Amino acid sequence: PKVLLTGGSGFIATHILQLLLNRGHEVVTTVRTEEKAKIIRDAYPDAKLTVVLVPDIAQPNAFDEVVQIPGIEYVQHTASPFHFKWKDAKTEVLDPAIKGTTSILEAIKKYAPSVKRVIVTSSFAAILNAAELENASITWSEANWNPNTYEDGLTGPPGVTYRVSKTLAEKAAWDFKEKEKPNFDVVTINPPFVFGPVVHHLSSLGDINTSNGNLVALIVGRWKEGIPPTGVHLFVDVRDVAKAHVEAMERPEAGGNRYLVTAGLFANKEFVPIVRKHFPQLADKLPDDSVQGGDYPGGSINNIYKYDNSKATKDLGLEFISLEQSVKDTITSLLAVGAK
Ligand code: NDP
Image 1 (cartoon, rainbow, N blue to C red):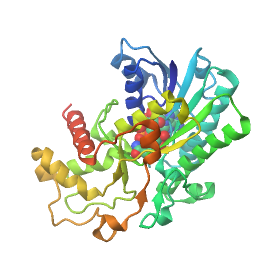
Image 2: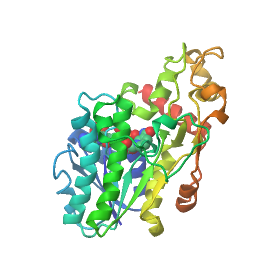
Image 3: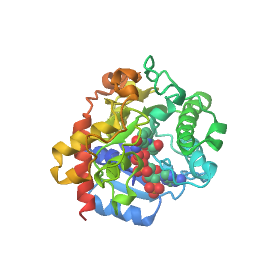
Image 4: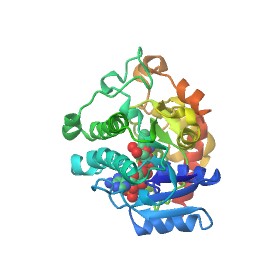
């Protein structure tokens, strides 16, 4: 089948693109600039792949043209801002996330009757309640929704704005399905912190995607004096996130579901012994055992919330990559970028 993948130059989307092509799907992907389009075309010269420019998903009717490419059966909507470098929360984060989601759904309903399913990359940010992030009696699952409002997103610190953008974008997708009753169904994939090998084009480690940023900081020596707080203590490897997106597309029974895809709990300080073990050449960049920070609350995994990933495991057939494997493979890919 033919699949439309938005944001094809991104960290997660590049893994989805590779998996779709490996499984024999034909892909149309959108990127923002001709430069990024060329990099992708050059990387897959023989693939059944079309790269199309959509410079800003927040613009009205941004997707009207691309969805009219004949024969698209599935849409994977990953494009959404994930960085903390904006000046204006509304136009640079909330609009692209929320309006970008509604506008692709509207365009599909209007112009692309062949589409059967839309998979939206949502986030654990749409599930968690920041006030409960150290509550050991909570078990997070698909049943939970982030209670933050649009107003919180406009006024809040950057983390809140990002989380609101993901929450309201996901809500917009479910509302659209319910109210507009399009022919397609919807699935959302809700990952927490995503680590994993960088396979998208990266000109330097300074351009690292947000969720791998801490691993870069660690290996360039920025944690030698202190390890930052972990924040959201759940992770998943990018290869499992990509698999979840593609399985959610290929399995008819996945329609109508949201999926929390996580491998489990972690704390930032757990990166250090993994890197020490696998990359002896980085030893002088690492904090020694006396350096504080990056632990579980009160120093114990028992003080942190629980999670339930059984729905994604069962419905999508996922077996999650471990933290050690994920960190090891991420660092290997980062060293390859740094060496260029
Ligand atoms: P990236 O920053 O690598 O990918 C984001 C993609 O969205 C890029 O291709 C970016 O294009 C595109 N994009 C952002 N804003 C716009 C816009 N206004 N118009 C057009 N394209 C835009 O990050 P990830 O791969 O991590 O993120 C992909 C998705 O996964 C996002 O929806 C994110 O919210 C979600 N997610 C990520 C998690 C993580 O830990 N990594 C966790 C949970 C969810 P460009 O680079 O050209 O700006």
